[in-house]
Length: 399
Image (cartoon, rainbow, N blue to C red; front, side):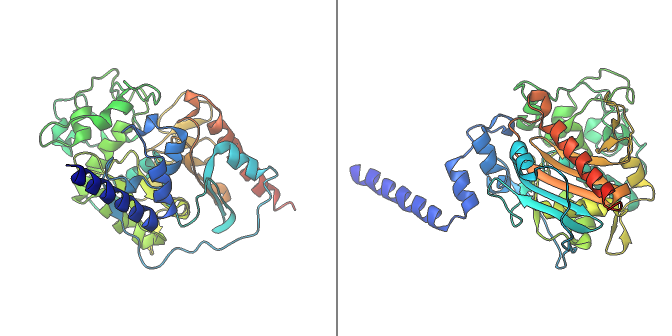
């Protein structure tokens, strides 16, 4: 018996030694800070620092699917340094930023990294993925897979028939005005956003659909805006079902390859094998910036119009009032009244797009809390940074 125990211990030691010798720095960091909770909302800061750059390498938590890139990367030439008139290093430290890229007129005016992260790494998107998902709905309409955003959601997801979503339209799902009751409190372990990913799906039903179809209405569809990550997961199921392709395959086919993303990305999967479309794309920060350029450029990839005429204008302007002056919500985009719009995710992920100034700002990080609602002011600080960059660009012609 003792010999068996000794043999097992020796094998474990040898196995750990081999892992450590062959693992890259990200995997070593992850091994030293392995999350102890299955829900990312309740990880410690060191656990998030380690895992956000390697979520797709944690199969014990979630499987993932590759979003394949093509051979020719969209060029991001270096431009003249941008004088933002603030301490960028201090801003990044306050934001706990892993990456910050400012692209103006197609040129990189600022690119900095932190948290021992770099351009070769891939960082998780969180809800930035929502804007990718809604863009795939536009592609599915252009391809004829979806007739209209005024169609009922249940026409494309039959398992929602008889639920509170039976009479909700695709547009109401995109704008989060379904009227279905939902709790998105990231600090509450009993909130819907904390519970729905751990839900045990009904047999033969997608896990998100299984959870969402049990919810109740609290308002008439189209009359009340409430932010709901679960609804973006439904949007993803709808787009995937309509196109008869996985979201990863469809994103690769329509945007990742033809536009020229530099690296393969991945998309985490839910327990029933569908992409978690309200979250969890793992990509290089430069490729997040390229997605911003794709949208700002009218949705054209390799000379082909990927999205319906007028889609981007509708998607990125206020479709729903969110109760904040000067801001609104479009088709899974946060909108500003000056014409700029944002894809953003918890803990500091973002893509800011200002078509008037031909400006894209991509950033990734690990805030101490999910959003400002849980404490801190990183969200307001980042918005102020966006404004400061706009002012810096406006000053240049005068100089």
